[in-house]
Length: 211
Image (cartoon, rainbow, N blue to C red; front, side, top):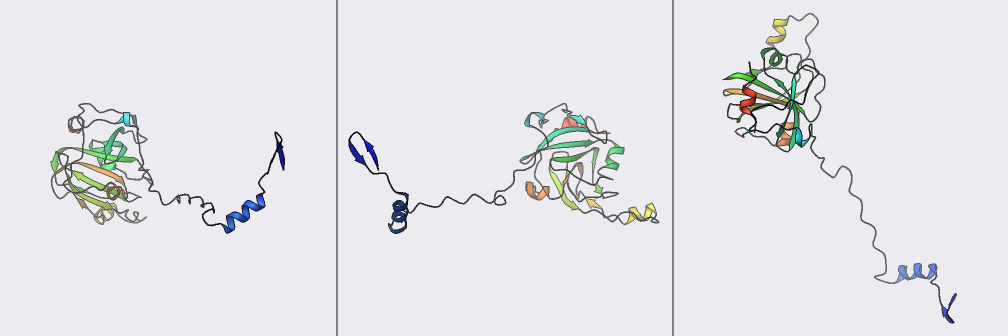
């Protein structure tokens, strides 16, 4: 008990309160809600660049962010809900090398191939060590074909280069294409890209550097 201004005040007994909660309907405390399982929330898409680093689709000049380890210019472009850091392969040597020799394809990155003309194109996985998604794009920005390109067995120690190249699977653009976008495996599905869809590319700026 406690005493307050000449009147008695009863302090509640913890044991009595516990018993009341056990036997009195409606007094039982509701259990705290279960926290969401960390795997139940869908992960946010990876972003390779900040919003301010993007090259707008109507740009006449590319916003070069840096030079990659392969000595290629890197620009920021948005594909669907993701901002990618794209290496630009715009000459014969860089287009031929592509992703060859690389063992990783980091999220939020990609490679954009720019050709100087329009024709049906066939890409292959020469010396590529990781699976790659590719979308071929015509001069209007429409996707003409998409593929999941699988890594090929490495060239054998005694395998002639002509035989190695001959056994490579060829992935076709099916119709005339001027560009090709390569992304980490699974990104085309995640982004929900479809054939015929138009991608917002800075065509004038890209075409000005193709050779």
